[in-house]
Image: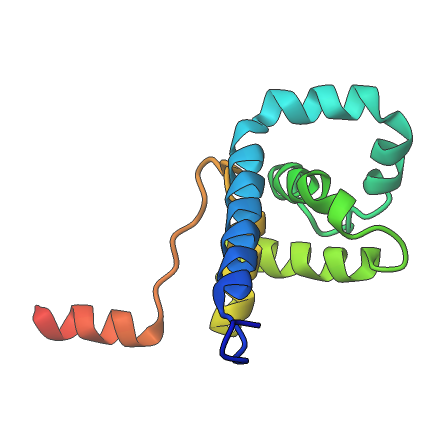
Length: 140
């Protein structure tokens, strides 16, 4: 409260800045975690690696699984029991969007892309929507 009895917005702005800094720190940390770091993490956390390996689906190629596994390792500490199912669902949303071109709500895609920031997918397919294809053909 201020001297005149009104509620000050300063603490809220400070909280927002702290939250934004934490989000930035998480993004920077994720970017620093390269594929080699994932392999080191696996070696140091064998029990966690064994658990994550059980999440592979039979239809995933090695390339898809390697990328989704990295997604899981990068985010598993944020989704411990009983929220692992939510992480698995988010990892499938990300993988389906990247490898199959599936579309989801913009907020959901933004969230999973933020979670996957720094993951490099080599030779990822490029998908065009029907509208993009029609527009491309009309230009000819």
